[in-house]
Image 1 (cartoon, rainbow, N blue to C red):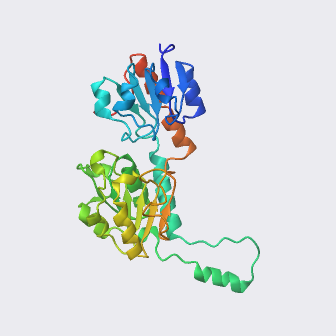
Image 2 (spheres, rainbow, N blue to C red):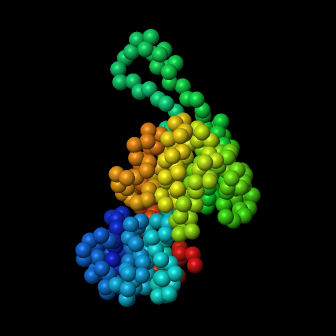
Image 3 (cartoon, rainbow, N blue to C red):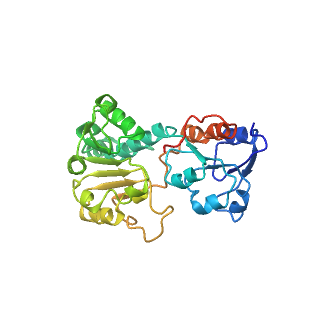
Length: 316
């Protein structure tokens, strides 16, 4: 059993998951940005992180006894997997914990962008009623649109399923050849065609280093003048300077950006001050259900410490 094992929790977990872990080990809760963090991990055999704890060689050198790292979430770009393998440290994560939350968020952002609304707080006369109804009319509805999904992984597939059910035409591009029965009627296209043809571009590629500015200047310049561009993946996968210029040059375009590089961004962020760039503070996975699902990475952390096989080991 893991009763005497020291495990450090560096970011938020749900209370039930944190308590469950504390019942099975000596749990130390210490924020990754606290001055004492590196001291706290010096004797730890387990570490549970979320998005903002950077597990690099410096951290690993400060934690010589580490056996397992739990990532409460789906992305692994804040963890140096190669360095962990070199130390025989098992990394576990929750690959499907926030899929539904992110897809609901994308659809919500898109629906809000397309459908103007008038909210009544008091009675109005017939002329104002008629005026509001005349002025409040969406130019496009979802079923008119071609949705382009960059990255048809777990989230991309679920988004394709939902968007197809709504009535969108869905196209996608992915690194791998995805069997037709797993595409939910989405059609594979080249990168160039996706950015040429999509009325809505939604980014769902992962945070590997090679994806830095993957959505390049050349791709951004291909987009339609009235495109809706959505990014809920990672901020650094976008050439932000070019996107900002595109938005200035195409006032009918709209960018809905939930992730940024860096987070939080400073006053020099290229997308600040653009009326057609809506910036959000990394909220896509912020539902209670998703937060709870991600927190239960602690199950696999304890399995590893007890010598069992985890359910969700990080890919090699």
